[in-house]
Length: 211
Image (cartoon, rainbow, N blue to C red):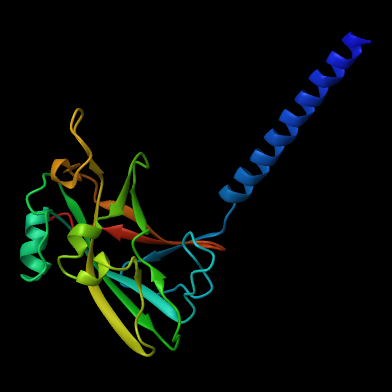
């Protein structure tokens, strides 16, 4: 009798594991089959009815465009795009940042916004990603230190220069911005993810060869 009970328990566990495995497979299959659309630099991308990660993100009426891309150091970014009144601990940190000339327009949404800081880019090798460097970005747009989202008035446009980086802390040092380093960026092509559902929208970024 005990042997039969043990056998039933084992079979139940196996069936449970199989069920979980099938569910994981189904979720991954759906994720991989998410419709994807690519856009070129200079092209306006209508991101209404989409979201990045938060399904509550209300982007109706919003469009974005990347007009140019460059790779530079944090010091050069602050020199070219920073504002003297916006202090930063970011200047002089080794490595590179990918800087995007980024434009946003709103054709009539009074309550909407864009979750800007969770956008990210991936290189052609697909083995690392670049996140938005909010501390460096705040040297130009101080509001990014106070809010992770961008909201602009209806029927207006906004332009900025967004820095993205792949950062790390050297082994043995505490996690602190003063100890951060950035990887040097050698690739010239990246994919900027601006929407992740119900359709994935990607802007194909190309850095000029002379950069």
